[in-house]
Length: 52
View 1 (cartoon, rainbow, N blue to C red):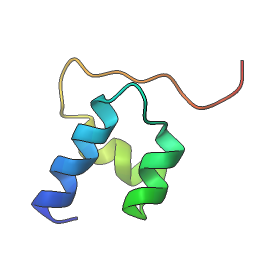
View 2: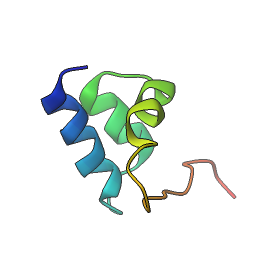
View 3: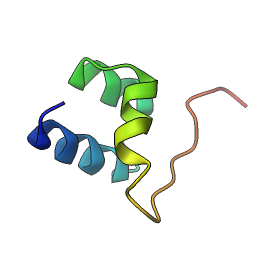
View 4: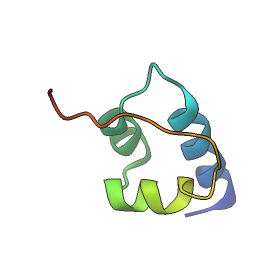
């Protein structure tokens, strides 16, 4: 991913109104790719999209 796309992924990931599915769809990436690039962003956590 480009640096710009990584920055956008991290920004969207930090937004509590964005689901993981929406982020992946918007960026056209897989969940594993998203997590690979945002895991270094410390202090950010997002609940899974799985129904509880």
